View (cartoon, rainbow, N blue to C red):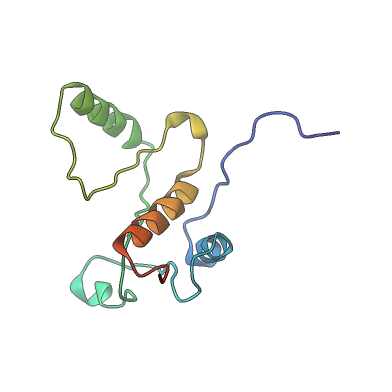
Length: 121
């Protein structure tokens, strides 16, 4: 018997101990990976391994997500200016479930690859 039902995205915990094995299995070089950021103060940011090519933010979104998505949709449909050409923005689609960690990983690796240095020529 085969599997039935729909496939979903892999939900990943926002934790370097979970994210790093995932992205290394995808082919990210072992000297690159995720690290915790303990705050946005200069002293705390100085602890972030360098170079840093992406930041994934985790925040409680129950009260934020719905209104924020409605606001973004209204801006897009109202003819807001397009984003800068060197900016990649990905908004999670409502229909794919709890995949924000997985999407953040893919987005971060793509941003890092575009910045250069992740994959030697």
